[in-house]
Length: 255
Image 1 (cartoon, helix red, strand yellow):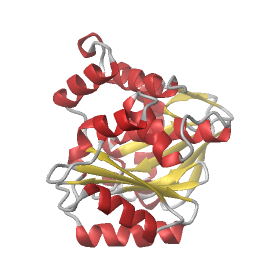
Image 2: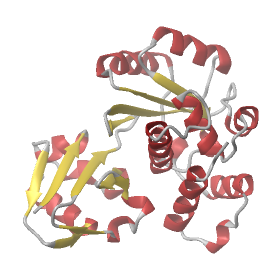
Image 3: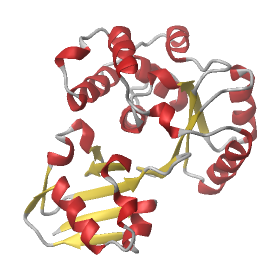
C-alpha cells in the first residue's frame, strides 16, 4: 500500500488529506494520473504547479516524475499557490513568496519583520538566485537536517539557508551573492512551527507587496548566473540534473 498525503490545493482538489493506492510499484507520474481521475478540481493538480516528495525527499532531486514509488512509501503532493506557496516541511509550516519589486530598504525590512514575528524564521533573497520553488525547498530541507544533526555552519537556521543557497560558508559573501536589493525582484522565505504567526506574516506581506511567483521560476539567465556562482557548467546538464547539482552544492557546505 502506498500512502499519498495531500496538502494545500492538492488537498482541496481531492477533498481529503490523504489517500491510499494499493499498488506494489508505481511512478510518480502514474500517481498524478490517479489523483486527477479522483479529483473534483483537476486544474489544481497541474504538474507544473506541484511539489512532490517521496519519504520526505524532493522528487526533483531523484528522477522527477519518473521516480519509482514502492509499497510502504509515502508520497506528499503540494500545490504551489499563486502569490505564495504554503505547505509542511517536517514539522514546519513553510511559506515562499515571490515579490515583483522590493520598495523598502531591504535590511530594515527584514529586521522589522523578524522583530514583529519572533516565532517565524525569515529570510529574504534576490529572486535571481532562486531556481524555482523546488530549489528553495530542497536547500531548506538540507539546512534543517544540518540543524537536526548539529552540523550547522551558522548559529541560525535562516542564515544556514542563505549560505547553503549560495554555496559559501562566509556570511558576508553569501549576502553579496544573494542579498535582497531595493527596486528588484525578491523572494521571502518564512517557516515556523507556529502556523498562526505565519498566517499573520503572510497577511501583512500580501497587503504591502506586489506578489508574483513568476520571478522565482527557472530561466536561462538564472541558470548561467548560478552555474557561474557555484562553479559548474550548465550546458552539460538537463533541468533535473542542474537542480540536483544545486542541491549537492548546498549539501557539501562545511565550516
